[in-house]
Image (cartoon, rainbow, N blue to C red; front, top):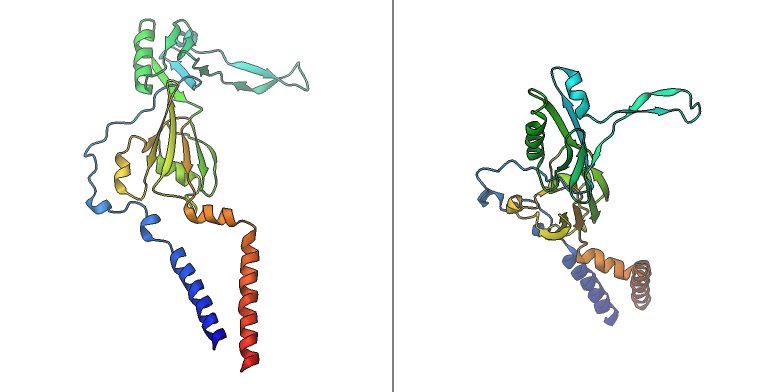
Length: 264
């Protein structure tokens, strides 16, 4: 009889563990309470700001190509390393690297301060300055090294290049194939550096109002870190001993069963 009650206690213990290990809906579902959420009626057009070490592609064109040529960096032909006297058919596009002071050295115009300006502000400045020399210049500007880092409890952590000039936190997480079941969805850390000053924010993507957060849109070089939940931390603490514990529990149940069988 004692063995019978012992088995019941073991089964009850395992049931309690299973019960408390069940996940709550509020820990995993995104955009909760979205029906009653209040959003900004109108969003201003989001634009990233140019920062030091950004790599800019700037191309100036005009109705007369010869007038625009002085305002473009020269393309460099690359010689074949095997046959130096032969020139490959490809050309290397040269970019403008924003220096530590936030400036670029632009043909004809000289040093230009672009750090801290948005893309539209830089375009407006260039059109104004180049317009002195060229009538109705056409300027194409693009940030070519826009990237974000996604770390922690996501399926595919890594550094992701962004082809456009706008990306949301949700899009970055989707590029990393979403959070794992162990990721804390209510405490996602976003680290940002602007003008050499680092800042951070914690975002709860289970609540729909995070869309109004200033960290909903990511900036270049942002770091997104998804913290592991308690289940993952506890599992890591147990580590290699998990298999041993399971084996001992199974052996214990087997022995108790054999003893009951033998006594009956």
